[in-house]
View 1: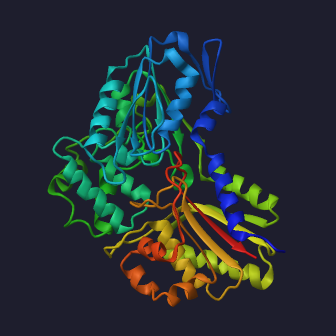
View 2 (view 1 turned 90 degrees about the horizontal axis):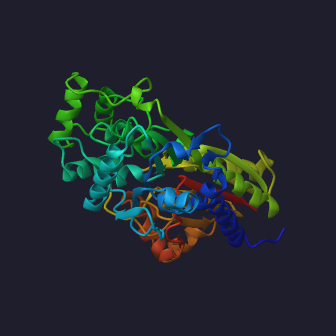
View 3 (view 1 turned 120 degrees about the horizontal axis):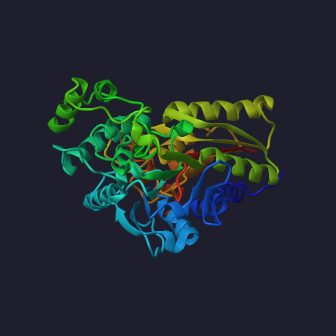
Length: 443
């Protein structure tokens, strides 16, 4: 079977991204008819004549596209609104103010946006409707520290957690307990208004309270869980004193826990997930099958250390080559999720380029195998690349130009490595975010 594998992989990834377009999802799933707002696939109906005002707020990498759709759907019914998006992830909006802010480490713009959003929902009363548009990245883009903690201290905590290799649910657990917004606290501020919280999931398992740290969702975690995470990842001596003091006060009962499932503030809150990693994987599988590959979705819940994730994928690729199980060649193995990297070096990179660099070593003796790992938002960590793509020839190519794979891995400089080999993939902001996607082709 003669195929242009590189072209096929790009088609598969492109089709997956098209399937998780936030604008299209909102336009397809949100409708207004006879003055009533409905969400397709749910029994939720909102009689807009009942509300004096409609506020639109939100944060995340996909939020601007969601906001553009909501503006087109609701038009003049929107009283006011404010969203916070990553630099470059904007849309042309007429009724909703958008702030561009830093991600993954928050900045002053993000804090200004968070304060504006907080004040906006506090203004709402029992006769108002708040529509929230939440997507991946929203946690960093809504940095409103609790009393006694400043932005610099919040940033130090964020950097420590990200470098520790902790999965996003644990990172967000700690974030929730030093914030005025996260962990259901925005719902507390909006009460007693009606809230429709529309989300695009970028977390494993689509746990609602983890997506953007759940500003409108009951918090299932606690101060003691946040303390244990800091201890488990060896950060006790590193986190700012203000953070330690607050978490210890919470553990001792001197501070209230975030609102939980039985809290009255959630009585009029509806949470709806519009898109997830599974949506992207299903579209990728169909595209790969249409291209002639025997396609299989391995999981949408890949997490843990990137090295272990690579081992799992390479083992399956070998099995396909040797036995034709679980599918025969030509095969396309698909997965999604968010693997972790413990950062010890000073290089540039993200979990996708590091995943691909580790995969490159492992597939060098597997003729006909290709591997790609890409961020669906178009940016892998603090870089301008989405990820990288390699095949069984890539290792020998890198050796021929004098590159030492182990050196670049030890320095966490996967971006620097692929910048020299020409295997980086730079696509720019996609204005969506449903975690990462891994594609292995076995020809």
